[in-house]
Image 1 (cartoon, rainbow, N blue to C red):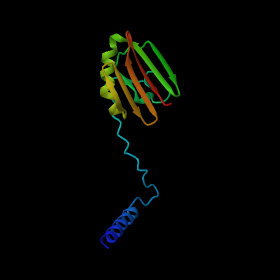
Image 2 (image 1 turned 90 degrees about the vertical axis):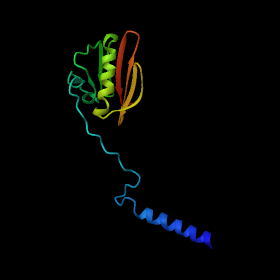
Image 3 (image 1 turned 120 degrees about the vertical axis):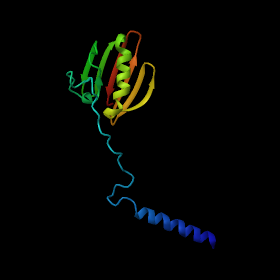
Image 4 (image 1 turned 30 degrees about the horizontal axis):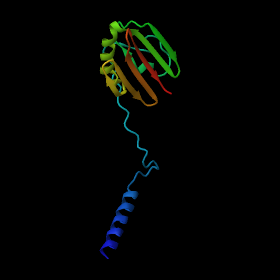
Amino acid sequence: MEIRKAILATAGCLLLAGCSAASNGTFGTAQPPTPAVVTPSSGRSLADVGFENGAAPLVWLPVGTQVTYTADQPNLLIVTGTSSQASQVEEYLRQTLPGLGWRITAEADGGLMFEQGEWHGAYALGTDSWALTVRND
């Protein structure tokens, strides 16, 4: 008899919990709050330097960054530069990406991976250059 009471009590609790779920038909689909974007006090966005696609307004580089190659496509942004500015660029990205709404998912000396919604990015230092890519594939 005690087991039967326990089962009925558990079932009743589950039914009450189900009734108190979201009443707008979106049970289990709650969206996390969108973080406020904090524009860096220095630097420039890729959009400010002429990029027109994708996440260009949400990726910034320090003022004075010399770039050696760029690609601006709807699903891919690429920027490269010489290793002489690599540590400055890497540190700047570490400091500004979270405020711009990106989540850093992995980091090591000479490398970062980050994401925001459908966009995924990476920064890597090579032998004589650095590269930054942002893509949505």
